Image 1 (cartoon, rainbow, N blue to C red):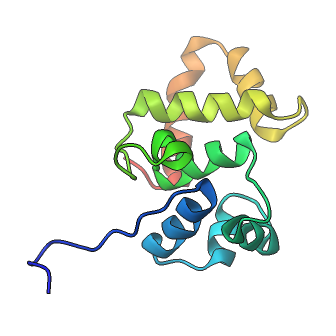
Image 2: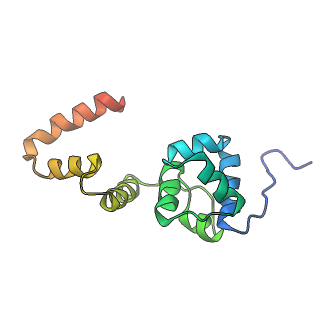
Image 3: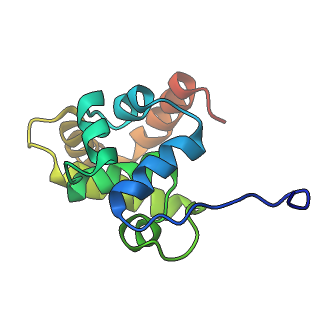
Length: 135
């Protein structure tokens, strides 16, 4: 028996094994994992089994949505989870948005925001807080 607070960590050698381990560690189903990053459950199962490889975009989505270290996910180095600063979270989101099609809602929304006069930003911030329930 291990002392209180310690947990057994399975050695995971491949990116596929690390993704399967992450899903188990998160305590969610492959279906929930897939839904969170807009993938199909069969694709996630294929990745976990090693018959498919995740794309760079999928890796980015996993890191962003689950606060996972890209170094750990790709190479098994360092801690599995990371605490991201607000700037790091925004940089990840903007990287994803830039990779989207020009007609995507997020890209069009940010483009529209770039055209707004500065005096509108307080109103936009209040509206965003209202719909997200943040303070």
